[in-house]
Image (cartoon, rainbow, N blue to C red; front, side):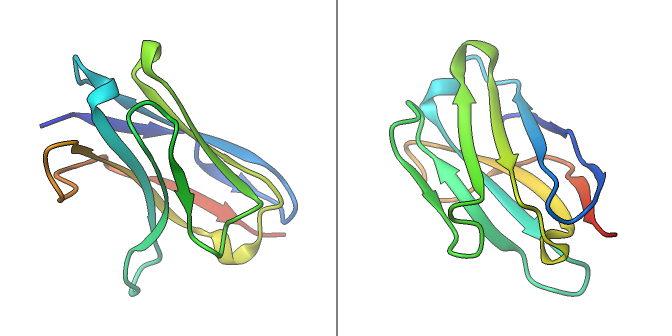
Amino acid sequence: QVQLVESGGGLVQPGDSLRLSCLASARTFSRYYMAWVRQVPGKEREFVGSISGSGGSISYADSVKGRFTISRDNAKNTMYLQMNSLKPDDTAVYFCAARAMSTLSWGSWGQGTQVTVSS
């Protein structure tokens, strides 16, 4: 399993930007697909987007496409989520997740970081 630690959450106003980071403990970080998932209390988790091990393949949920950007720096064992034009509906706890290339399940999760968008 991979240990994941998110950081960068906070309280921002609508229209602001925020960047989240996810630091992984994996020795071979580049062999893991990574994802961002968010959850509002009482609601199901929502997939935000994912990135392949090399960073060459990235996908996004329609709700964030054009506003959020996922990237990774394999030399730093870190994945990022750049969030621009934030809306109140983006308020949630944001989790990062990892899965090895040989598996289909997201087996490792971080503890989450709160993002609150409010005026």
